Amino acid sequence: MGYWNTRGLRGSELEEMINVTNELYRQKRLAVVQKVPTPIKPITIDKEKRTITLAYFEQKSTVDYVGVAQGVAICFDAKETTKNFLPINNIHKHQIDFMKDFKRQGGEAFLVVHFKKYEEYFFIDINTLDTYYEEAIQGGKKSIAYALFEKDYLIPVEGGMYINYLKTLEKYLNES
Image (tube, rainbow, N blue to C red; front, top):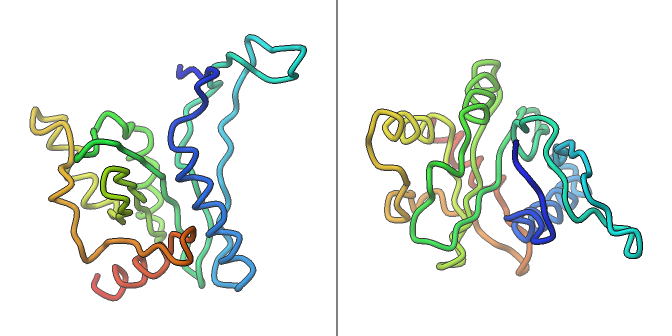
């Protein structure tokens, strides 16, 4: 089981930007996308501050977000890295399996990857992601280099805080 502690959850800045973007999409009636909560079991609670200081995840999560965008079912996970690569071990088998199952049912599944070093956000579809994942399991590279992310699938940041992943998803769908 994973643990949460006072350092907080990694990627929360990225998730906050996605949450703001999703609210804008909802207001503009472009999409309804929600954050999937991960159930936690509190272990230690600071009674003075009324905060959880240590907890464990009760079950494996699937993906961070699920919803529908203009009639297309979507699910995606948000990943963030400070390096010039995305470690494959940041992606779990149960997440890959869920996204592949989602895609088989006619939905679209992908990652939103933030390279903090470059302040760039990328879209990577489940089929491409699964190829890298399977290669890693078979003894290949254990990460996806920044240089391997397609510039065509760079996600634009608009207004300084909106990660317009729908624009990149639309491009992907038009090319598929």
